[in-house]
Image 1 (cartoon, rainbow, N blue to C red):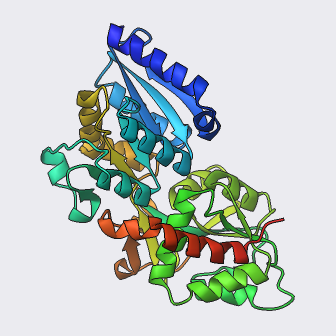
Image 2: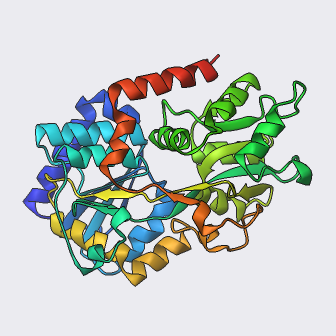
Length: 356
């Protein structure tokens, strides 16, 4: 291992020891690849290691001399750390991948990203690349999930209006049995809720009904979906379809609906930090993800969701392409992070979900 790699690992270890806030935000670490590598590549992501790990392994087949240190973070923690790295001009990740794409746009706008272009990046749709510094690499719908054993067929919500109807009666059996993200703790949850507020005339009524019926805001995708399967919740709103379908393949108690009024579509955003040590490997990894081999690997892990192609798994009505609402990578997303806008939005959310 080179002296630079050794220094880098020592720096990272010292930093993690002496900054308690980042240790608390970090969820998991796993090392992939060569035991005695020529290079070490640091990947920080909000994507579960169990989900994205096979994609990393496929990439490493092309780079057997490389070791990947995969750090799994919550979106808010990853954003805070990446911003701190940028401001202090210190080496951290070689690549950052986050579902909190509004936070990633903010980082790029603050000049935290390295610019790169290739034939593959140029082929991305304009909505999935910004300033040659941010790229959308996945396609994942925001869905509703339900417990197949406990929710009658007639009650399965096909739209947000249907979910409102389930929650409206004073004696609804769904009181306290509907879950969604805690948007203060989850950057993705905040993004989905904010996008709903911009998109839907139903948002205010739905938020009020969720609050009045005792709906639960909690963390995180995997926990919410598992709790629906186990019957703690009957329905969950605005969870990632990639995680839902992955769980469904192992547990047939989970049903999935792409709302037919409209379905938000997330593309996780990838950024190469401007102070990354191993930019060359980062560029190779990005090109791999955009190549036919990388796309196949992402499809196999459901991060490019077959639900969007009409594959069996969606138990709702067929969703028209015009009902899909991709969340594009653009400065418009920064409105969600405006301090006053965010505080106003969160205050209303706290009124809906006041907590214990």
